[in-house]
Amino acid sequence: MNIFKKKSLCAALAGIGALGAAGAAQAVNLNPDGLGQVLIYPYYTTRADPAGNAYNSLLSVVNTTASVKAVKVRFLEGKNSTEVLDFNLFLSPKDVWTAGILPMGGGAGVVTNDASCTIPAIPAGGKAFVNFAYQNDGAGATLDRTTEGYVEIIEMASFADDSKTAANVTHVNSVPPGCDKQTDALALSEALPPGLVDTDGRSGIFGGMTLINVNSGSDYTEDAVALDNFSDTSLYSAAGSILPNLTQSSPPVSVTNANGFVFTSAWVSGTADPVSAVLMHDHIMNEFVLDPGTNSGTDWVVTMPTKRFYVGLGTGTPATLFQRNFNKTAGACDDVTLAIYDREENTTSTPIDFSPPPPSQTNALCWEANVVTFNNSNVLGSANVANIPTTFDNGWLDIGFANTAPIHTLMSTDTITTDIFAFFTEGAATYVGLPVVGFAVQSFANGAITVGDQTVLSNYGGNFAQKGTRLISPEAGFPSPGAAAAKSMRTR
Image 1 (cartoon, rainbow, N blue to C red):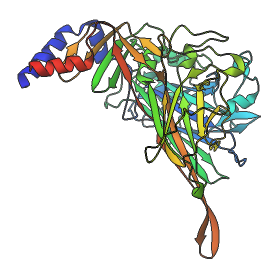
Image 2 (spheres, one colour; image 1 turned 90 degrees about the horizontal axis):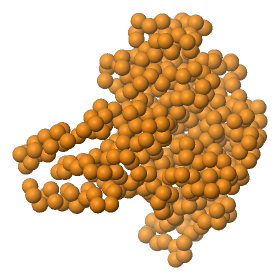
Image 3 (cartoon, rainbow, N blue to C red; image 1 turned 180 degrees about the vertical axis):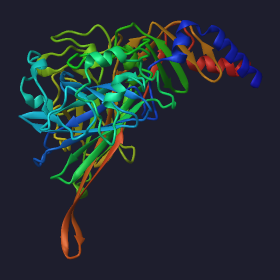
Image 4 (spheres, rainbow, N blue to C red; image 1 turned 90 degrees about the vertical axis):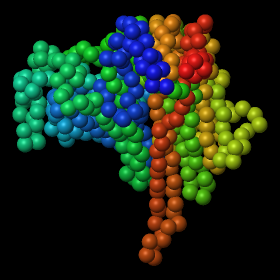
């Protein structure tokens, strides 16, 4: 057994080539420990729940490293992932930055009391989100669209300890001494690739979001999805620039674990394909609770953070991956399959359908940040909602992303597939599904609890990360991972 492992490893190292060398040193991947260079917060909202109580969304980001970092903070509305605000944020070593997304000026906006430097500075009263970037997409031009969406934070650069930028933005007695002196030009002249000066071995940044509804007495939390090894070059861009974005992974290589195999894939440079690959699932699954005794409700957040890089405005089909372009109020719909079960394995005798049906007239998710609700419980009060009617009080749902190439598929330019027994490098691989992130929230209300001699309302909430499966297939004529592993087992 040891001899086989040594021979396999030697063969792997000898044959790894340019793709393998790049993948071994730098390839974007989904970090299971939550640390990375890119953070995707699946959902923010300031909308009101069915009782009229509004949410606030409280965001945090933590720099776990011993170096100063500059990150781009970007807020995107949920229909078409149109940017509604961004700015540059400087995090000193071990720093935490916090902010609130609140109702503001007919839409939403960001407020913060944090001392960390930003370019431009955020006014004391907060900064309202803007709507001019989506004025012409036909899906609504008002500020109301800014009240739900998602957030990206992309690490742009690190800075040496003796740099002027580090001196300006590093906290001294809890306050950075030189925010007013810090400029984009200075930062650009001193920017180093992310991670270059990190000496403590940490992966980077992490963060989370709390969706709090004070008047209803509930809150739900979400962890940011962390992408590690996103770029080995400085991505510093001035405030006001739409860059960096998720098409700038460098090198354009992804590493994905799926079904006991590691797929290291090369992609066309300048595309969102490497990030899409690590987020791809062919099915997502989670539970729902609708118990009438606790007036329970369930919502799922299903966000597609790279969709905007594939779909255009108008009718027709994009060149790859997604099914339809963004067609005004119809959105950009991707057909899905739905399978629902109660807790005793019962399922419906006929296929379940969204109600009302989406514009595609089939079960479909049509927005970039979608909310799937059950029996119109609409816990989060979303306007980007798809409802599933069911007679089950509780159970679980499987959403599948049906595919007919090139719809819901990506093909790499090359892929190395490895497992404990085999190493093989021939050809490309097809990734099936859609790039999604998200979570489920469940609400419970109980008005019959007695404390002392008083009956009090008690609200509870829970949240759960989405589960899913991955389907990655080698090209035709290339041995499947299972077959290769079985062959290796037979020849040991």
